[in-house]
Length: 344
Image (cartoon, rainbow, N blue to C red; front, side, top):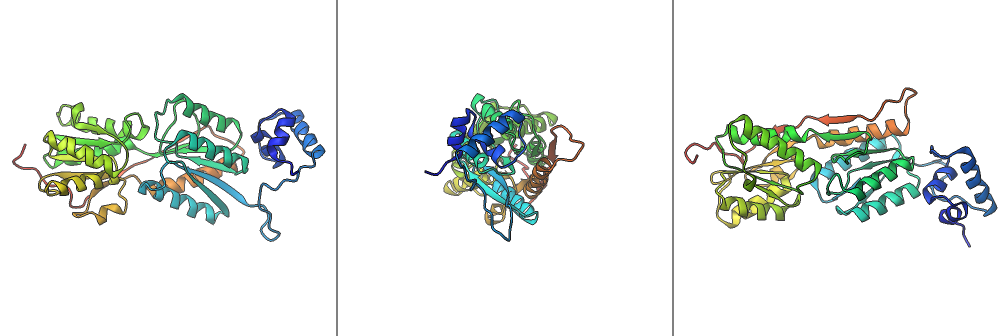
């Protein structure tokens, strides 16, 4: 019977991850005595390591894992494409895992990636509370495994590693500020999950823009849901009932749902309802009229993520502590926002 990593782990009294790291000569925090113990048992069990491809002409394959919470999300598609292009140019193969915003699926993906001995892992965590105990435990366990890792887009409370994201607060401020500059005061806001890092930051920016323009914040004008079109439809229905003249959509896909609702009710964009999105994806120019949106530099974020994970895989002699990398978003003006003259 073929001997597997888990068989050695059971015999040695250690985790399968620890065995994989030792057998593949990866950096880890195990003592030399423990390493030798694992290797001795592997020899005794006549283990043959087949965990990585070994073509004669290619040699060892360098790999990076990429965990994406929602593969249909257009912004994450931007990030993923940039990561893959950058790493492929550096002779790395990218293993992408879509986890459908599910913590258990994310855990399984991380477990598989570490078992496959990837050189590093880029993680965009599932869309849950950043202080969720299970999420924190999962990310810290990944750190303890010794596999180089970084976080992208969504921070996780008390998990300290390199983190790359857009300045979401500035993005929310830009969106609301632009609508205010066009004369809108009763501005609805449709976002993803209430406790998600990016949502909280975009809402902070929205609030700041209102405050700086002397407009009171109204919690009733904020609708929470998911980053999808259905949330846009439901949110628009609720907010239009409350008389908003404009909507700040927390993603272009949410904005798409707002367009759907407006069309079903005979509302003209931007004449009857102004809309601004977030992400500046290809969806913006497919919608009619074209959607004004906040661009958070998705491709640049992906490239920086690839660059930083390589720095973690191949650290310099003088190692620095974890760093945060923030990209400044910018507004791309199109035709979905009208100047409000008489309604306010």
